[in-house]
Amino acid sequence: MKKIIIANWKMNPKTPRDASRLADKIGRGVKNIKSVEVVFAPPFIHIPAIYKFKTGAQDCFYEKSGAYTGEVSPLQLKACGVRLVIVGHSERRALGETNEIVNKKLKAVLGTGMRAILCVGEAERQKEIAFPKIIRDELHEGLSRIKKSFFRNLIIAYEPIWAIGTGRADTPKNVYEITTIIRRELYRMVGKRIASKIPVLYGGSVDDKNSYAFVKDGAVDGLLVGGASLNANKFVKLVKAVAGL
Ligand code: PEP
Image 1 (cartoon, rainbow, N blue to C red):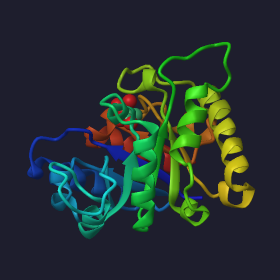
Image 2 (cartoon, helix red, strand yellow; image 1 turned 60 degrees about the vertical axis):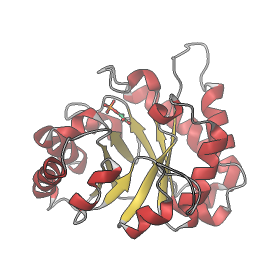
Image 3 (tube, rainbow, N blue to C red; image 1 turned 180 degrees about the horizontal axis):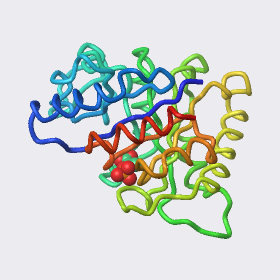
Image 4 (cartoon, helix red, strand yellow; image 1 turned 45 degrees about the vertical axis):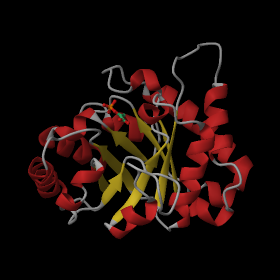
């Protein structure tokens, strides 16, 4: 399976020009890499500025159109060339997004034929619990009553909240253990044939020094990268390290 690396730019950079420069610089650095798919997830307003690249969105609404001031629909994103939408990022959940809302958004995104990344992860590491209930609930409630055929466009990102933006990345060993349980949970939900094709990524303080270890020893199918994706040199190194596998 080709590795996937998503650059989650969060609420950066400031201008469309900065966004296009950043994407151009990264694009030049990774252009000959075939074994890794790189997707940029900029703020909505910068999507047109980087239309030449494979683009994702950081969120969306679940309705198709209508009186929803401030929202953006999956159909609108698709019409702008977006291929993938991040859903249920912990920074969205912290603003009040529930598993029920995540479920509606996943159905809406997958219903358009775009890919969706469902983010799951615990707020605190509890040593005595191998698989926190919160992750199980995020998977089961987030994926409740989603058509089996939609699962071929699903990606899961394991992102322990305590590791996001803190510089305290998880260990590849732990990521291996948790993502193995996530994969097992997916087998139970949709069967091995479908589940084995769902990419499972890791996110949380990934940089150019640890990206290789997460993919090799953590055995994940890719990475969701925040802070390090805003530094073109660092991000290109991070991608090259994974491509060197
Ligand atoms: C993220 O935003 O999903 C993320 C993992 O951020 P960072 O890489 O900065 O921890």
